[in-house]
Length: 260
Image 1 (cartoon, rainbow, N blue to C red):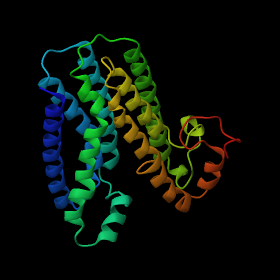
Image 2: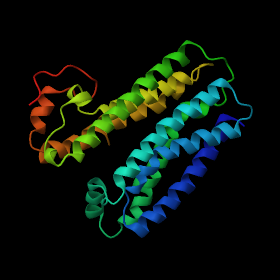
Image 3: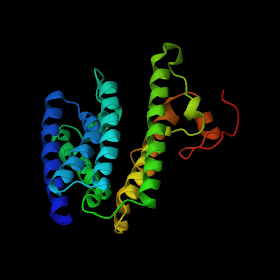
Image 4: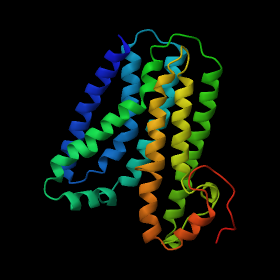
């Protein structure tokens, strides 16, 4: 199977899955269930590519494992956070802005768009399934970046969950642990994970697949990650503006002053 054929199959399968999830969202009147599937979608793409490309190699197996561990952890975390919660405020705002036609618009604007993004970001994983060269320096570097990213993301999520579980912290800003050095350790972790997967996939020079982690980086920094979240937090959470003034927005760095 050629790379283009593999990309086509993945796109077709994820499109069907997104359509099914969209139908469920109409029944539940909750579009934010799409976020729970985000990580699982990459797992589906990774394993489908693995089984469609023949004999297993170290690189193929490694890429599937790296993607699966990241995707399953993220989806389980989001599912646990989502359980019993209302539709995410971002989607509520979209629903109110678009009006009665939101149910059909969401198929393209939310589910279709996420499916396309998912397939682009996963390009290193897909291309890596066709790379039969032995692993080397770039693969080792990629695993190191992935490991650091997963730890950053998982620890950041854990610290935030513990902070929110304490009723005494209601309305307060978390500025301890990893959150002392970056306002978004979970997003920074995602950033490292996908650049790590990209480097782990490199063997015969599929450097063009950098479009995948590059798109993820843009989304995290400029679109649906840091930029979108902070517009809301700055306006609605007391003390967040001070936290922004002393804490790095993305890349970890010592704070400008003591935590308050």
